[in-house]
Image: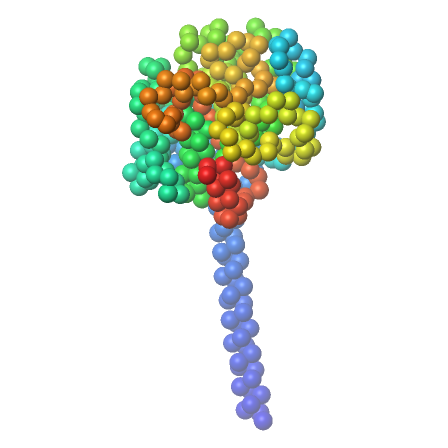
Length: 331
């Protein structure tokens, strides 16, 4: 009997030891995973396969008044009636995506080019120089791309980094641009001060400029006004705010290629259009001179002023959710 009891105690100790070992390994793995997730602060993301990186600013959760309630001098306004909405926290790119960054994707020979059956595909080569001599390497913004190209770049980044990036919704974009302000511009109502913060019709010499040369908004975001029109995730719906939900609103997904929403105004626009609440939308005329038949789904011959900026949600979606997102918006 004593021998049996001793044997049982020995086995129990082994079982307990094994259990403690498993728990310890689980804790180590958990800590390692947590260390890969940045705390909610500004961080820098390296782009694999290059020496490049981009800066992501932490944008706090909060409420704001979206739109202008129609209180502008513009005709055909659809920025009202204004609506209070609540946004979850997220990260947003401090700068517009540059051509240097996009080129890492465009030149990635490990990724198929313009093949519909592949999960990730590079755009077809540009048929003309879509920079139009305004600048390419060295910090100039990426331009002339369709919303599809911007989203495919996000999908490629996810494959390379396992971090989910996407385009902002209209609500997220406007919230980040206003940065807690309620004035026409995030720096006030005086359009005479716009040149300190934005490249627009008056000071751009009809060219886009290198990112980050003007003053940032209160949340550290550069070129939110002017330089490039920026793609959002949303399909463009006139007078959309009335049907928006009060929390994390976005437009209902629409399979139509046009019109999609853009924000911020560009180097080609006047001071009235380069403001926080102004809405823009894409148009088929943007591919008017496209020599391809059918028209390119990647590039825009008449939209040299169109670029984009990245967003990362505070809540990390599962791999299944990420795949569903890209399947929805790209297929």
